[in-house]
Length: 385
Image 1 (tube, rainbow, N blue to C red):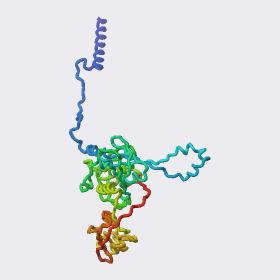
Image 2 (image 1 turned 135 degrees about the vertical axis):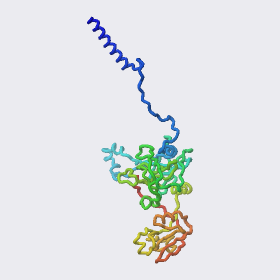
Image 3 (image 1 turned 120 degrees about the vertical axis):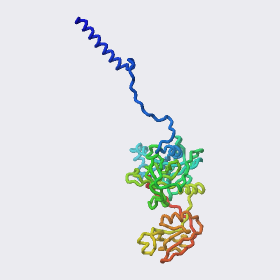
Image 4 (image 1 turned 45 degrees about the vertical axis):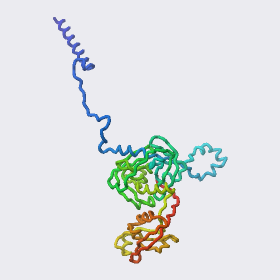
């Protein structure tokens, strides 16, 4: 009897072990139910753009933004006389031959015509001997300079490629502070990049960046290599050309500046039509009216531009303007400060007649003047990225 009980106990133990193993390794073998976790998955093809996404705008504009690579001859080595010495080269010749002979830099540009016209910054292509443009489809093609305008820091390039995806220009009147914008460019050479921010301010001037300033300020991250790239709205239209940043570190600090599309279009049309930009000029040195100056000249408001100097032989001298005169209006348009005065005169055509409203000896008077042609600025070394 004891033997039978032992056999029974062993049989039960083995059977339970077999059942446990079968349930562990083959859970469906005994008719059990598998445990599953149900999750919600997005459709493979989105039915609409995700809220808060700017992918449609980026997709529309990105093919129109290009990368620009430039190179120029390196500066002359001050020790060139030693490098040309046969004895010197006998000992150091191999090392001298390995020294780089060219300086390379990069930037961005925007295709503005399907016939191969590209707008970028003047400082991106300044003094370049060779310019190459990398298109969004992967092609790299040489480019030539059609014309530049250092005073607005704009340049127009031409590539011999047809049917390019030209960007759409935004309506300048629709650009408002607080609008969401995207900056597209090639920061630090990492490749085409899109960053997002808002328009922080418009009409920024007195920054000392360009002669003619009317910048859009944005907090969309702009870094070295973004210069010349596109600032677009949420519909993918060109709002401005990225130009400069305020930075203490060399990187973005949330204060970037773009040349508005209205100014870029004016400059582009003149360069394409005549190869350069022609502006009006009267030949004065001017400064802003401070509250102290306004009080000393007994002006009601601290506005206008003080004529601090008159160039000899200039249209201003011929018209009878004198140092100490205060320029209040040009052809009926009020002069707010020296920057606005400069812009108002610049849009006038050479040889055109204009009327200046000035204040002299506490009296206002109108002075007729014949506008001259603004001299082209002398090339200067650029300290921008």
